[in-house]
Image (cartoon, chains in turn purple, orange):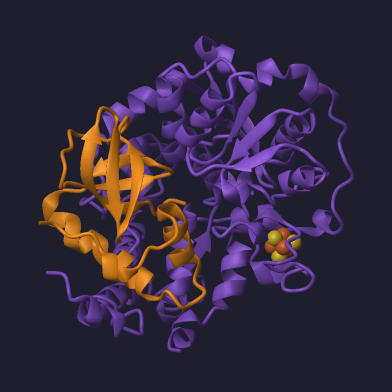
Length: 384
Length: 100
Ligand code: SF4
């Protein structure tokens, strides 16, 4: 059963967190399954910003056996929002329409400006906590136009879908930059440089889609997918399952987070998601054009589609000059598992949390920001 | 963020619920939650929407990670900051939601 808060608080190393014996047993299992791969480590990719935060925070990389390499995939929704998508929101904001979005989108650079720059130049930009709040603001000022710049993966898109199904007021519309994870896994799996041998899928996103959503992927690519939670031991259990599947050449979908995820997932949410959105091709920043990787509003919801309502404003937006250094940003390579933050010449100087050059340094889910904040040895630094 | 935050339902009015997160109350929508919920149930929340009812036997285990994160109030920590930004200012470990 759960320990008391005092016991948890006194935990200072990843293996003491919750249960040292179980953690060590999982690490021993991983070492056993990878003992012949020390010269050519098994490469596992996760696709979730929260997984990266937990891996960095609890220092899991520093305790992993040498035969396993954990790669950060494109799991940061802010980071994969493409510059032209930001440009659309900036153009709408500068035309005098209220643009509302989640807070972490403000500083993400577009081709020229970020939404923060637009706000500083008298563009109308507001941060909202939820799409429900955004609809509420529109309803309160019926004579003004409000656009919700909708970003995030399927877990976030279901919220947007739910509000649209309530037929929001006519002065409200949605600029969808929502993205859908399974198609990007196909792209990454096919990149020859990446050499990913298995994927750790995000537990809470999978609670919506269900583990079954990964079955066609596994069948097509012969790579195992394991769904994992966010406790250090949940993550280690996911790694252990993956290296076992890889060693045995048994590509399967495994659910190592059954307390939150079922095979069929949340049907009610899926029905709402797919009745409002349909998959369409879209660019994931710095990585690739991903067939079916974006979620766009179905024709039935055209009346609330900001891309249709503000077509002229968007079309007339001039593309700005890219921010200094942006062309050297390696975010895309990092999210594709080809490079690490330290491979970027701008990492740490001039690109920092307070002066980000690329989206991976802006977002709290971005690999560069996580690497810089946790410094690679987070557990030792956890003790004040 | 993919983490989401667990909270306890205080009351329900149609498709909105008052949910308590570590002493902070917020309105949460119930449009997409996977099963019927009632006051006292714990739900996992993401951007103002409950996405899953947490089975009773899993509640303690689910809360433990968040307890630990929020215990580090003084520290600059990305994960803790994200959890706090989802539940708003004033969250503290002292106010952890409890059954009964
Ligand atoms: S350090 Fe900055 S510039 Fe370099 S890849 Fe990361 S976000 Fe881009």
